Length: 363
Figure (cartoon, rainbow, N blue to C red):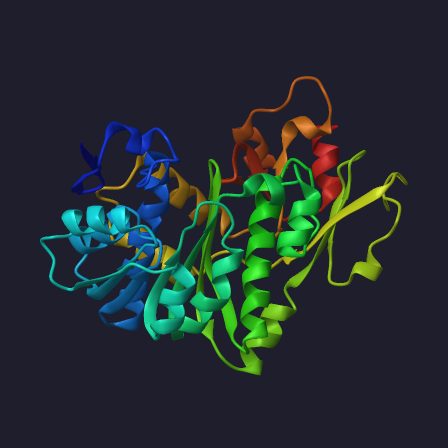
């Protein structure tokens, strides 16, 4: 079966390859957005580093991600593809047979990463949670290298299964209207702390939420001077489910038991990353490099992210949380509250105005 994505045409074993995730080699067309941003990020990273890249895809499946990088860019020095399934490697070899700068491995992803070191880029895109692969990936990445991490277990870190989030990510999720952003910030926090254990620093440079997955990119650095400011960005979000007041805190002990505004029970989420999600240098290059061959959703996401990157608040709002009645149109909200759209929700908006000003507007 022949399929297309971006600029490339590739083969899959059968029609079930994109319908049934239990097949040997699965292709998910909704993850095309994920791969779009891999192409855009690596273009930007290559420009900033002024070099070609040695990259690794430890769970390559059909090889479509690397195929797109080879076909849509000229930045790949060598690509290393691995998959634990021999059938996946067979399909990947067929799809990338035109390229000589590719090496294939058929091992467990962690074994592959521990055996092979000093990659400029590593892509961690498992089915489910990435937590079991981060230690090996961080160890295998060279200092100054870029890593892309995907999580598809969004239900757990979005609040549906809080105990699983605590067990797996060491953070309490928050079941609120901006749960997408809370989940992404928990993922980022976890990756940062895993790097700390290995005496490295992961600096977030770009991340987003789309449909069923979260995606975050980091630069690996070393040194206490880089670790301290990143560590200072890890904290908590307090939230009142009654009046919708929210505030960020650096220490769990500072979170009040009752809401400072209405006196009701005050919930919290975290620890999570409270800092900026985007590095403007990457954003600007990604937008300038052209958006050929990528999905319409990817273009909308990137342009919306550029807008919201100017807002520092680690949450967004929806007009309907402030009560029933005629909710102002989003365009009017953006004007009156000096707000921007957010890629997390097409009904949401981001603003750095204080909570009382926002609530008074809706009242």
